[in-house]
Amino acid sequence: MNPLAALPPSQRLHLILLGVNDVAASLRFYQALGWQPAASSNEGFVKFDLGGYALCLLSRAAFAADALSPTVSGSGFAGVGLVYLARSPDEVAQVLAHAVAAGGTLVKPATRTDWGVAGYFKDPDGHLFEVDYEDGWVLDPAHRLHVDGIQP
Image (cartoon, rainbow, N blue to C red):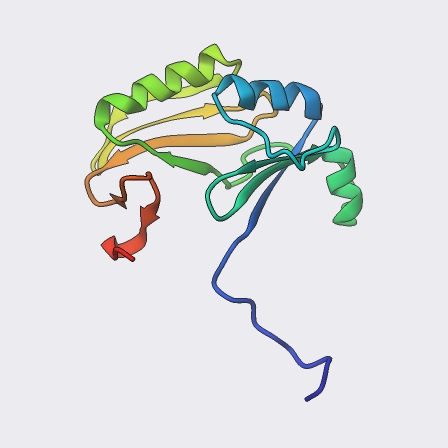
């Protein structure tokens, strides 16, 4: 077998990397949300275990350098959002309020939509999070998502 042959990745994501301006300040925000960093985190790379994958914080400068980006800054709408699925319609507003109390910015309050209830906040670095409740998502008792309602 040719060691340089193309190999498609499995249909998985393992890490979500967020470039942040100040790793320590971002760590404090996520801890204020109630999230605990992994013991293997360090001052330059913080990991949060999300149950089979991780949210990781690193400096924007380090991230840009590693990705060979010509610039560290971004602007405008990135077209990317992270989504937290709430367990109930009322939980949407409660999670948004907690995020704001932790230092986030409310972008859109809990609002009835065609599919349920949703709202948005940004973390201190401007990363967009949606808090969403829809009847169609299937979550197990541990709050893990089962896409298409297929239970393991």
